[in-house]
Image 1 (cartoon, protein in one colour):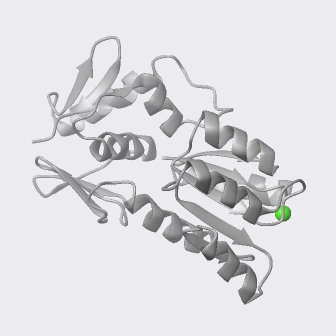
Image 2 (cartoon, rainbow, N blue to C red):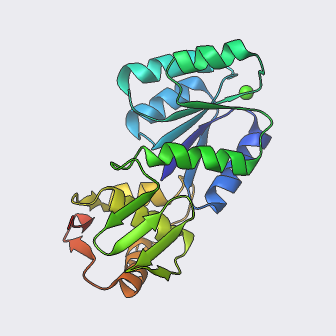
Length: 219
Ligand code: CA
């Protein structure tokens, strides 16, 4: 899952990115509203975390402009303002949720998981394809009820494939969901993760679509 963090406070942005990345998300940061609008247009993330107080545009303004082109893109507002008005204006402007600063990382992770659930068609915390089940809330994967031990990257990769079961995902798409902009990625890193997943899931669960990418079939 790829998260765009729109936050101009450098110290906070750095700390948040680190925590998000440690949790297994591909997370990137921009510091202005204009930069956010550009990224959302050109490399749309799965979730946007949007600070209200930005140096160029007001976060609400950014949100309203995003909503004109991306109706369903999950947006979580960060606000330093404790006033009820800002929250109401934010939700009225199309935010899916908000979090008042300061907040605990666990709280942010929980909100992201809720928003992430809307990305999969079932809308539930469990995605099941064939005999493979993935539980978003507890980061658990099981095959025929037997729990698997997956790395964070393997988990995120499998989650992306399961959420898009029946569709071919290109290498570019998968890499953008797994790695941050500034991450050094070996050219075969994706293949290595797929290889490990196949060892754990069985060789025929993830299909290679030659020259394009990978897919998981719907049963
Ligand atoms: Ca700010």
